[in-house]
Length: 215
Picture 1: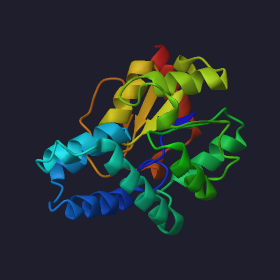
Picture 2: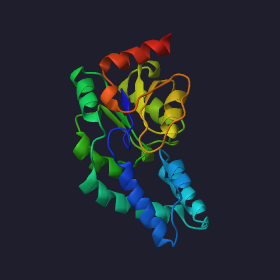
Picture 3: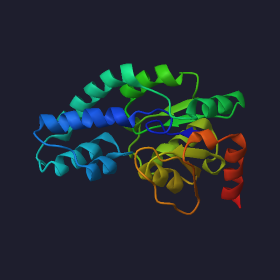
Picture 4: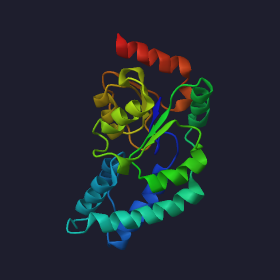
């Protein structure tokens, strides 16, 4: 099992909203709805470029903005992280069944370490962070890396994602994909099963997705 984090397991996108809007305001602007949607699921460098372009300030240093965001989101994660509906129960069922499990996120290691206080450090056999791969989502590398570290062929893995960027990454890697949109609606696509929430997901569904992938 390959789980995305932000928007999939935890309701953290609203915390990113706060941090991104605060940064935009500090630059004298407001982040547009379209730009915010484009940021969902992307790595930090791409997110900062989108924000700067949206504000008409492409000259700003992405690294400086990223450092500001990282510091602010760390504060928010310590106090406001909550589970997405059905996520805790599904993760518990997966672990109870002793299915090899990875967390595959575009967030950096420092942030993930704080999130693991909520998610549980024993909940995952492998954790792949956005600052630990050469190419982030939508590139397939994060999911391929997770499968390799688990020692499981990627076509025997189910990836659960909430964003178009994450779905594209998992599909390109060759995993079966369950999409559960959070902040941004997802366009249906072949080979991707979509649910309104993880409340409707169970081990039987995950097994069925693997059967479909091999058919």
